[in-house]
Image 1 (cartoon, helix red, strand yellow):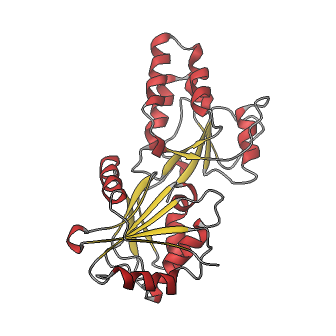
Image 2 (cartoon, one colour):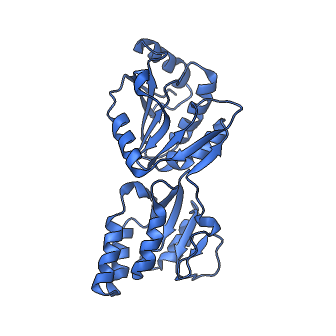
Length: 288
């Protein structure tokens, strides 16, 4: 769902083009800016130093308008003695970017470079990133749709009124997703919000989680579960600090496809605040 784009900070040397490019990274699209290197913003400001004061200010305003949810963190080495593009090419060796946006092609052609000069093409193949996409309701289908959220998010909230950890078709999806998450060196906060449609007694939920969800997962992965009134839940979401994806159906295996849609910033912020604030009913840790 999320796509990591490496943006050459030297693009900040052209205020108009930089603003146009940055606008393509709205939270309602899958495009996210790679925080590469960690002082990317400072390098953009440095690139803008040669501009006239008003143009320089426009670059600064564009950068300050970016929010944390528009970035993904990357743990890659960066050699300040080399050009940014040379570093980006090396970083590709461990984890490829979806695309590299730059003005120059130093080092020769590259299949994932998008040239960002005055002829920048926002409709180029690597820039195409629809907000909605069909997904297969299988472990592989959900993994494909949610891979970026699982890889980069610091907080992940699953919202499904009818989540049933005692059913194999729900188990297969959830455990497949959590097995990917637990491989990360920095584990995110994981929360599941489900309704009281089935689990009216927290003790029954505890027993099902310990029987069906915990055993396949590693002990260090902590998950909290919140039981909410069914009347207050109307949607199926995966909510993260990087955005919110809406689904038409519950997270279980089925022969029919589903549609995943990224929501606007305003709706995302509302839903994140709502479900983050829901008190936990129980918490469990994956077992060895």
